[in-house]
Image 1 (tube, helix red, strand yellow):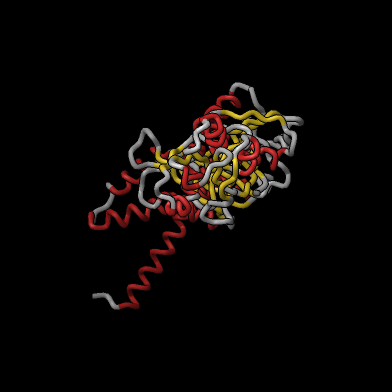
Image 2: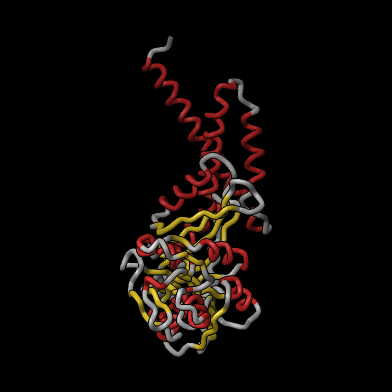
Length: 373
């Protein structure tokens, strides 16, 4: 048996050889990426990585080391890709738009009195021409067809979390996030004038409105909950029904607009309830004061893929605000990932960080760079 001192001497000698080989390999990696850039070839190729891993595993004499070797080769390739990404040219278009269209037409989901209409006015100002649509996707279709210049849609509630439909739709239509705003949510119980709470048998609201008011509704379990497409639509429905057994949970503005009587204000569970809205556009607009970047990416289906991405973000010294995952419909148990992090696309460090993220993903798209709410 070799003693410890001898083992260390031999390991040091091997490490020296490894460093010499490492330098040679990285030099070749540089030549490869320069050739691909010059010839407009795809830089990072997942199939090629798999071939390299399997080829090297077949060279092993000791099969017991197979999984350790797999990790070693994968890490070596991750380092190589990181180095190559630093050699890629920065791609930000210097002529990228920084300003919004004057006097825009803005779409939102709902009707007059919806919280989404308040979000439109928060971002674009009172008096902005706006159009309400029945469903979330109708706003995307209207933007696609040029009926509106921008859309304003809810993406997250501080109590009930993400609004997943809009994560899926922004990907489906390929639009950009160009801004965000937040609205304080004051959910109120309203009904026909003269109605008392004990008269009510059904209450209508958006599923989020019902979820946000769950404690109040639990105390009045005799009232049946009826999900509706929108809080303001629910208020209008109650007024149109002329039925004193029906009530709505909606905004104070909706109560006023539709001539209902406020039975109880602020029935939401928490008084600090806020909904975050995103502003979407067909064009990439990056205001100069932008400080938040959103990206969507997919990962190779292999051990450590997400960890590699998170390590890349950490090593790039950028602060991640949020991560969400959504299933890929055509592939079982695989996901799209959405990440928000601090930064401005005009900064070189952010552009290089995005290049590194591309090196560790199968697909990646920058959804937007905008001013946080």
